[in-house]
Every structure is written in structure tokens, then in C-alpha cells.
Length: 269
Image (cartoon, rainbow, N blue to C red):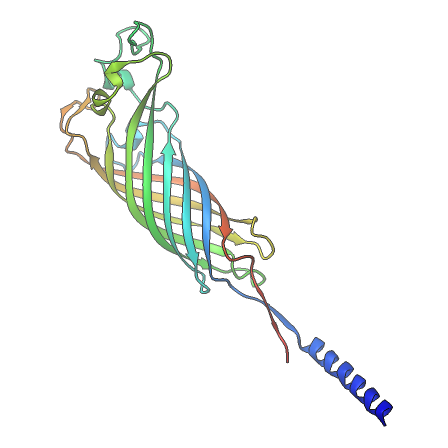
């Protein structure tokens, strides 16, 4: 009797196990996760719509931007984000000797004479800082990876830019301290950025997550200096012009989700 009961129980277990195996359904789901990203982008100011003597007229392009963003991805594939970045040019101030004739010599090749009477070999480049908050949406196009797809984003915040003067060989007091503020075109204003690109999150690895996007930025800015000297612009006093800069570029971001890889859900019946 006991032997018959044992065989019956064993057979029931086999049937039940087969039934469970046949009913397993694997589905990939979207995740909710905070995400840290490190991004790099090239920025090119527009000459068509930007205000005269804006960033396009001041600096040679392209500029390089390095940033970090903190995003939160909802299960609905909506995104909210906080992002900051540093933008740097490469010795790219245009018409520098015409802008600052009191600083540069009248030689065939104008130079900045340093404190020891020789060429100070001054580097003049633009630097910008920005801080923005934004939101976006991922539109899935692959059912096998619902956390990836076409992404559209919108952000707004503050952008500040100015010219940096670096003496590479000797000191040049005429471009240091308060004197540098006369020529640095420091400006600040409200910025809007729109972007569209592709957002990829791996189903298997936290190290293979990135997005690539084309961005367009509009910035309404003004001078924050009380006194500006720029002979090329005809300025020797307050700069009351309201500037508009239109910029565009390509951004690449390497992302790190803080809640692990995409989850798999198993359903047993």
C-alpha cells in the first residue's frame, strides 16, 4: 500500500512539474531607476539667427562640452533630469588684437608684452558653465528591449560664458585681475535645449548603457560687467545689448543605472 502511494505521489509530481514548465512565460519589463550619466558633446554656434557680436562672432567653433547628469527613469519611460556642464574652446577668441589694441603691440604679428618685456604668449579661449532641469520620453521601437528607443528631451536653465586669458610664459598684468574683467565679455542668461536621439539600455549589463542625441540650444543673455572695452565692437563703457545665441551639437552620454539591469518576470500557473 505504501509502495503504491509513493508511486502515485511521484507520478503526480512529474505531471505537476511538466505543467509548470509548459506554462512559464518570460516577459521583459520596463524599469524604474535613478541614472547617473557622463556626457561629451561638440557645440557649434549658428551665424544665421544669433545676435551680432554673440558667441558666433566672438569665438571660433567648435567648442567642447563635458557634463554630468542625474536622471530618473519611470516605468512609463518618462524621464526627469538635472544636468550641469563645462564648455571650453581652444585659444579661439576672434580678432583679439583689434578688440584689445591697448593690450596688444602694433607689430606685424601683434603680441601681448609681458612683465619682462617679452611675448607673454597669451591664450584666449571661451569657457561656459550651465545648469539645467528637464524632462523627456523614450519611445520604444523594439519589443525585445522596452527600455530603449527614440528619446526626445527638453531642458531649461542658466548658461554663463566668458573669455579666459592664460599667460603661458610670463606674467602680463594688463590681462590679470580687474583688468581682465574689462575684456572678458562675461555674459549670463536663460537657456533652452531641445534634443532628439537614441537611448539604449542593455538587458544584461550595467556598463553598456548610452544615448546619442542631436541638440539645439537657445540662450538669451546679457553682459554682467559694469564696464566693457572692445574696440572691434566699438565699446568702451556699459554693454546694454541683449544677446541671443543659437547653438547646436551632438551629445554622447554613458549612463549608469543605480538599480541593476532590466528585470525579467516569470509567471507560474
